[in-house]
Length: 434
Ligand code: LLP
Image 1 (cartoon, rainbow, N blue to C red):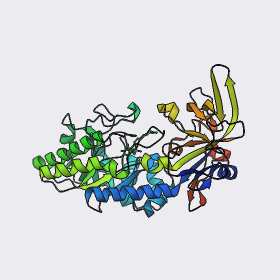
Image 2 (image 1 turned 120 degrees about the vertical axis):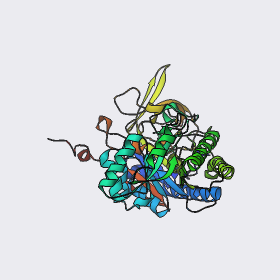
Image 3 (image 1 turned 90 degrees about the horizontal axis):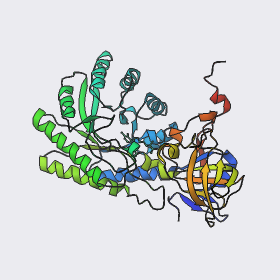
Image 4 (image 1 turned 180 degrees about the horizontal axis):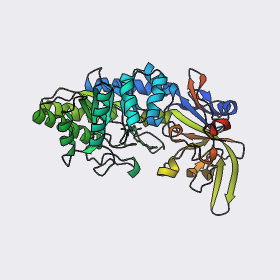
C-alpha cells in the first residue's frame, strides 16, 4: 500500500516507520522531525554488498555509500558495522567520518575543487583513495604528498560522455560538465599518461558517475563499457594495469507510486555484464569494483513529519496547507521541482479528500514541499508526513530565515534513537560576534 517497505499503518490509523508510530514520535520529539528506519538502511547496505558479490564474483568490491545523501556520525557507525566504504566530498564529511571512528582506508575522497587544506587532511588521515578531477589537482596533490612524505593512491574521474535520462541538474556524465576529464577529447588519456610520471602518486583506478535518480540500465551499461575500454587502452598503450573501477551511484528510488525502481541486483546487472564482457574481449582481469549509492540506501528510509499551522483556501485558486518547516529542511521542490507523497500522519489510510499545495514557513513563494497533491483532510494542529525524505533533505537543509534544523531520529528494533539533535536558537547564534 505504501511506497516504501519501511512504512505501515497501525490500528489507530497512524503512519508507522520501522513499526513506530509517527504521531507519537512527533509528540515526543517535536516537529519538524526527520524519522529514519535504520533497519532499512542496514539491509540495503547488505543487499548492495551481496549484489556486488554476485555480480562480480568477489568479496573485494566496495559499497562506498555517498555521504552527501545523508551524513552524520551515527550514519558512519552504521556503515562501519555493515562493512561499507564511504564516498566523501569535503573536509567536513571527512572530519565527521574520522570523529565517528570510521576507517580512513575505506574512504573515497571526491570533489571537483578540493582545497589544499582538504587534500592535506586526506593525506594526514590516509584516506583510501583520492579521486582526482583535473590536471591542476594532480599537480597539487603530488607536491602535497611529497611534502608529507606520502604516496597518494589515486583514481581519476573520467567523463564518459553519457547522457543519463534524469533532471538536467542531476546529470554529470555528459561532456559539458564541471566534473572529471573527458575521454572523447583525448584529455583523460593524456592526463593518465602524465600521472604515471609523478613519484608521490600511485594510479589505482578510474571512476565515473553519470547522474542521479536514474531508472534506465542502458547508461550504466554504456558507462561501464567505456571505462573498461579505456582501461584496456591504458594497458595496451602504456603497459599499466588499473586495479579499481568505480562506477559511481545514481540508482533511482520510488518517490511516487508511478516510479518503478530496480532491486540492487538489477541495478548492478548492466554494469556487471559490460565489465565482464569487456574483460573477456580485452583479456583483462576483472578489476575491484566500487559502487557509490547514496539516495538508494537512505532515501526510502526517511519520513519528515510536520505540524500543520494553517489551511488557506483561496477561492477558485488553490488551498495552501502551511507547515512548520519548508525549503529550509527540504529544498528539493524549490531546486528541482521534485515530487513527494504526502499523507496525514494520523489518518494515513483514510480517503484522500483534499487537493492542496503543501507550503513551508519561509519567506519565499517558491517555498513549496509538494504542489497540488491529493491528501487526507487536515486541519491546523494535525501532523503531516512527507515520504521518502531520507536522502538530500537533512544533508541539504539550511538555516534560511534562521530556522533551526530538525533532529533526526533513527528507528530500530522498536526503539527510537536520536542520531542528530534539534538545533537550538543558541546553536544558531553560536558563531555570531556580539
Ligand atoms: N558518487 C558521486 C561521485 C556523486 O557525485 C554522487 C551524487 C553519488 C555518488 C551518489 O548519487 P546517488 O546514488 O545518491 O544518486 N542533491 C541532488 C542529488 C545530487 C547528487 C550529486 N552526486 C538531489 O537532491 O537529488
